Image (tube, rainbow, N blue to C red; front, side, top):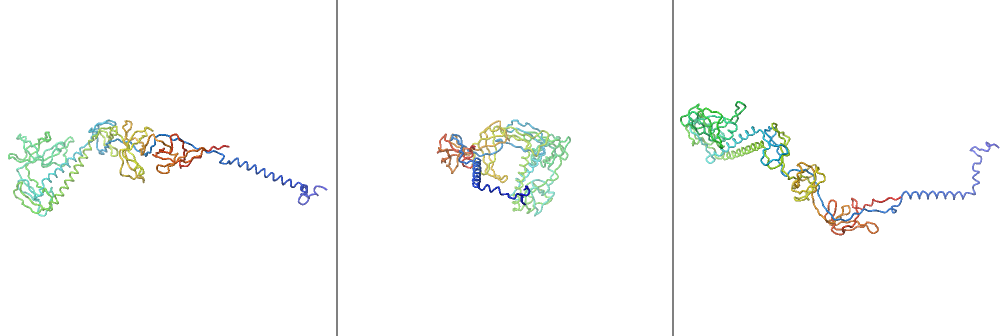
Length: 533
């Protein structure tokens, strides 16, 4: 029969016939299969054990450090900059012209030396005006008769004009009457700007009459309030002098001031012509309400004649107001003097001119310090201390001071000042303090740096690193030491000073003993295991 006839619809006619011959070997095949499975499992288990070794197969190692003697210190870190122990900062008068500069930046100066001068023309004029106003008010205040509340005429002649009546309010400057008196003459003379400033209204002066080659004494009755320009760009100030007519003088006669003042002879810049004093102003000299008038127009009066009386109560109030005005005038005079003093800048102490922004012929800047003078040798560092540390800082504490310019070189310092008031900066409260630095010519004002302020410092004491001890309580700590099996065991010790990097050991350890280093959280450092394959 051919091969095709032996096949069935699904292939060979008897496809499993061959298996029947193996029935006798069935047990052998099952055993063989079990052996293969067991062998494969053993291979897999051995491979897994090699890849993940047990932790017990590797020894632990610990880093030890010896107990030693040395320094234990605790510090507070601060930053700041160097400043002179004494420093004079001149802000200057902005937009004023510099007349002369006597030093250059870096020069040494002595106390009282003039550093620079400004054009003080306007400031001096203002001062003189304030001075005149003040002296005038002093004179008026001194002449006020608060006891009788009377207005006394103080001049002789005919009453030509009366400017008050009952109920009139007056002040010390109120002109209450005019007196005509040809027994007096006046003359106007021009004085230089420097000379007129020496005089005040009411001052006595000598007047020379060339025609008679003789002198008469007069009084300055008026000083003009403003200068008068003259040829060549100059300026003068006119003053009026009143003097008694001896009987031989008339209008239009030449007269010139020629008088002694402060050891100098003052001569007017040209003569003036005399004229009769047509009217003398009588001022109230008091402040208040007129209660009665004692004279009439046309009366012949003398210096002692009572012109009017002022209500007592209003006079008292007026006197107080007048004193207030006098105080205001005094303050204004002081301010004018302070301003004038700024036009000549002097050194307040011996030192070095470390900054100068004044150039001869130019105006001062409004944004720069005109000059800065620093004392020599004495320097300090101004620092800022956090509110959490300020309670541990006090005057007299030692410090190591460092400057960026000198790297790790330490300069000795001592806390010389601790601020008593906190300042809020960016949400934090800080206090200002100063550290006095021992003299060193290399340190310059303005240098930046930092400092370590010693809160606690001990030398030549037993110590261990902070990483080798766990502080349990004040004066109590725990260290770890290796036993005979190489395992760490805790040991209680007594501690002293706790520094930034070391802790003092008072008892429990001896010099040379070994202790185990701990990690930053106080536990043993077991990470140094050697992986052996």
